[in-house]
Image (cartoon, rainbow, N blue to C red; front, side, top):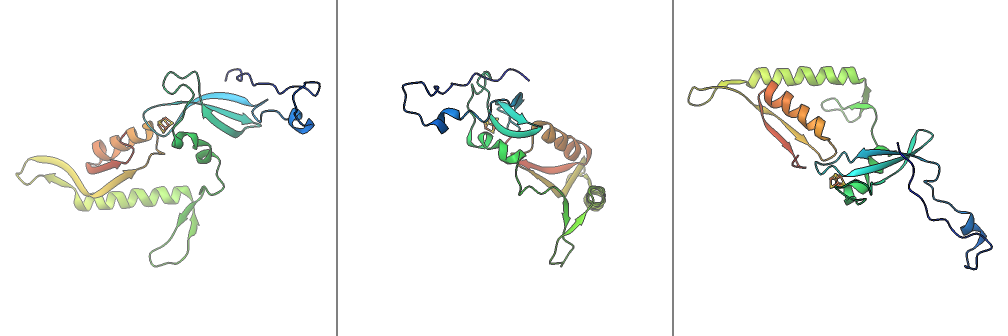
Length: 179
Ligand code: SF4
C-alpha cells in the first residue's frame, strides 16, 4: 500500500468559477480508498495496476503511472480488470450437467476435482504411447488437450505446462494469449 495520488480539488463556493453547489461538494470516489500496487493478471507484458479498495471491497482498478512498463496506461483488457474481480455474473459454484440431462446440478469442489482426476487418469491410461512409430521410447498422450485463456496468469500456465507436458505426457497444450 502507498499514499493515494493527489486529486485536483474543485474550487470552493467563494470561487469566481460558475460551479453549482452540488458540483463543488463532489469528490473523487477514490478519496479515502486504500491503494494497493498490483500487476495485471492477463498477459506477460506485466503492466502495473493500482487496486483501490474500501471496506475490503474492490471499487476500482487503474494503470499505475509509476510502472516503467505501462506508465499508467492499460490496454482494453487490462482496463476492464475490475469486471473480472467484481461481476455478479461470475459463476462461483461448481455446476454439473449429467449426460443427456437438461439441467445443471450444484456439486462440491471436492467432487469436481475427484471427477476430473479420475477421467484424466482413465483417458491417459487408455491412450498412453510408450513408443513412437519407429520404436523409439516416448511418453505421449494424444487423447487429452488443454486450452487456456488470457485470464489465466503466468503461474497457472507454468503449472499447467509442468503437469500436463512433463507429468502426464500430453502433447496438445495451447493458450490463445501466447504466454
Ligand atoms: S493484458 Fe493489457 S494491461 Fe494487462 S498486462 Fe497485458 S498489455 Fe498490460
